[in-house]
Each structure stands twice: as structure tokens, then as C-alpha cells.
Image (tube, rainbow, N blue to C red; front, side):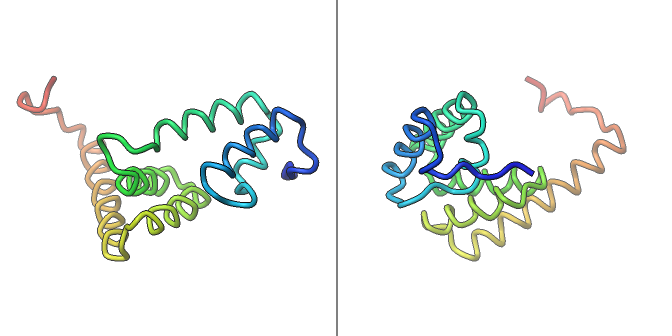
Length: 129
């Protein structure tokens, strides 16, 4: 198992990304995800910059983006991302009721997706591009 790259052990490229994350998020340390990804400084920078840009306020609010992130993470089975983005969604205003409803939507989508796939249901003409 890979070990985390702590700030004091990180090279200048990694420290620069850690510094950006800590400054933007107002935290004293980065999450474990970044510490493990830091073994590949190029990927660390790429993932950080893309995540920062995608999760910024836009047409969708940060709260909605976090709820979507949790939903996709549930579907992909990523416990780490469910936990971290679930906490972020709550911090950005998602209520327990919103989280419960989102989980019900994910469960329903998973069920109907599996049925439509198993039944090989063709797409209706009105839903085509």
C-alpha cells in the first residue's frame, strides 16, 4: 500500500498544489486523497485544477454540484468520495432530507438502469437527439 505524502516530505511541485488547496479551502492540511495522489505530481496538479474549476460556482450551485458528486460516487462505489463530498454537500447547505432524497434517486436510477439494460429497451424516438 502506498503511503501518504505529508507536506513536510513533499517536493516543491506538490507543496505548491497543497498550498493552493489549503488556501482555497481555508484548511490547515489537505485530505488524504491529495496526499496519496501526490506520488504523481503531474496528476495531482491536473486533478486539482480540473476539480477546482468544475466545482466552482456556475450554472449549478456548489451545493448541487456536491450532491451530484455524491450520487456519482455512490454509483461508482467510492466510499472515500461519498464521505468527503457528502461532508462538503452538508457544509454547503445540503440538508439531511436532501441527502436522503438524493440517495433514493440514486437507488431508483440504479434499479431502472439495470432493468432497461437487462431488457434491452430501445430508446423512444422522442428521447433521441
